Image (cartoon, rainbow, N blue to C red; front, side, top):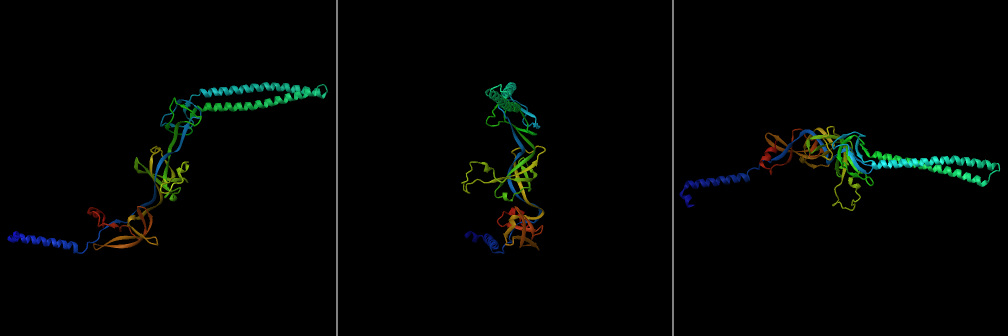
Length: 397
């Protein structure tokens, strides 16, 4: 203080600075409040959809495991991975020596039974002749009843033997036919047109069909793919066949593939699990998903088996609709209308008006059926607690 009194100029400057500081504080705390700031969004015109999102995977429309119906060593494989094949085309051969021997044995057994039949047929001629002779002798009282009955029994026995041999021949023919089929099974052909998507058994491996049909190759028809989308139990009640659907793949997220929903399976995949624990509580039970299926053309084979698909099932859509962010919607009244705050500007001043609007599709964006006009600004939040640069970009247009 002594220095200030000795230097009047410094004293005057200090007092002035204090007065300016006091004026600034007074103006900040006690002056009229600033005009409130709001985050707004315009009412726009555009297309809007109400969709169900689901994760899915791609499968071939038709896929078969081509296997061996007989046992043996895979002698040769006639196709390569990725090769296109036609229905009936030879794809593999199994060593057929065992089946050839079985066929020869079956044919030999058939020939043996046929020879036995010819022998019995000759005996039949003799038995008939003897029976006829004894019949004539008995009628002329020249023969005995015993000889007659013996001849009759011999005839009937021979006839029965012939019937038995005829039945054995039929059985032998079936055995031959089966042996021929087994020999034919050593040549494995394609059951349909398609592409070889997997080779399971290599040349030289031995296959055993005694318990389970072994797979040689997997064949798939890839010109049309099936998308299997997993729809949650919360959404599946809104999903129905014939609804539009689209999806994207990870390798080309900007390209939409469009289709029509073919079917929704009535039960989840877990129903086929014998070990499912039905005593699980709701808190510990796994989420339940249902398969929604649709087909998509794949002429250039761009889509592949097991690709991941991000699927959107379109429940409802509107084109050229008025839309606002769903965050702009306030309370819903008993009449179903929502309160919306609209920022109005007149003579450089901003005022807030309350509107009652009717809403259609309501997803991230809401479809406005009435109550607003294109270009109006709706308030989506208060901007007072936002950073200055965000307010500059979002408030009051």
